[in-house]
Image 1 (cartoon, rainbow, N blue to C red):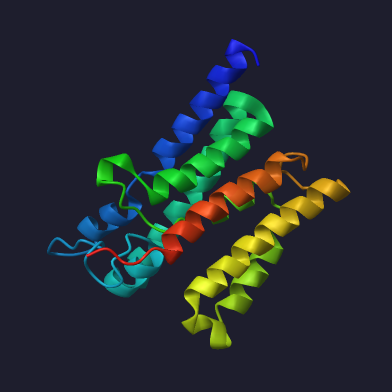
Image 2 (cartoon, rainbow, N blue to C red):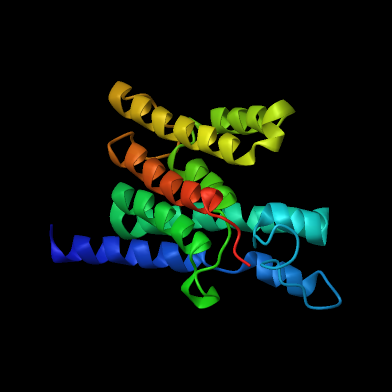
Length: 203
């Protein structure tokens, strides 16, 4: 690997981590309430879109969701500029890591689901409608009370689809041509999300 390519990949990883760690939920909590609210202690204790919806209401909750999705997509696009398709996958995964474990917030971030939606939209647009369908199915009926299981099903579906698209060489719309980086990035982001979803709530 050339020095220039290594620098590009390192830049993609760093930029993705910084973008992913932008505290959208914390900003919404400050702007959307008359008194300071810490989403790490209020509601479910998770500084993410779902808890923002519950604590701050739909207006700010959906704003946080949109911001988190945008962070994931922007990290991928910036990574692509810096290091091509590998940088795009690396930037997206780094954004999920930064969202879940931001160094400037004591590594106490969200669960990375919305951020990974942005990653999927940028790097795997062919699968994105299926991803929405899986999310809708697992978010309804008996699955609604099994958030952890539903999230794991969605993650496994994402990784499995990445493997299938790579092996079949199917079209990926505006995303990078399917290669081994597609399922690897999906697996890495899914592992981070699964770790956060399965981790016990911290006091």
